[in-house]
Length: 236
Image (cartoon, rainbow, N blue to C red; front, top):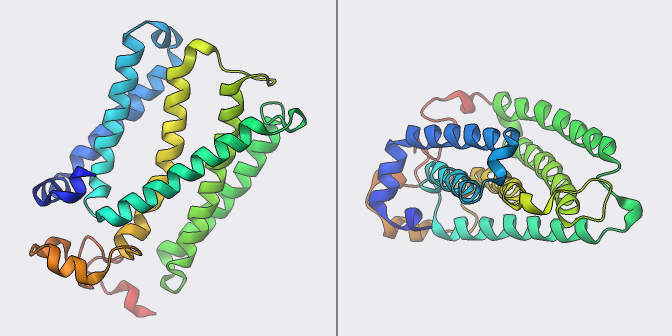
């Protein structure tokens, strides 16, 4: 949030975006180690420290996206993503025993695979057929978001227990990190709307909030124009 408000921070992270790519790669690497090296998750203090490092690295990684947005859009979509995760987490926990997602995991993966097929195909239209923009991206985002929300319900059931598959009580750091990344995926996908359409922040506010052309709302803005400086999109 602070990064979205401080002009110098916005400029720094927009120019040094590769730092966020490095922190993202490190976060994923450490997270993978944390998942597969089981002993690491049960060493007191070390498990907390590793989990904290992963979270902080992912937060820094998100700065590269945050600087392209504005605080009103950022907070709005942050709240939407958080509400969705919490809502589906509660739904998953309170589903009746006969709707045990941990028992019917095959169905869950089949549905996720179907959504993946939809997202993969429609994404090509988003990238290659300008006339489908932004509706193609909306389909992709909905497909991916629904997939993640299905797994949020699944994770909620494994964490809460009393199901066919349960997560151990002392594995709460892993559970927290999984839900954190579920939230991040949904939230990251909203930056397309935040940076290209700004549904919450009015143009008049941007025009009076900064004199830096890097964050202007002009159609040739290299940070906000979907097609950069090329005229590819004009062919249609």
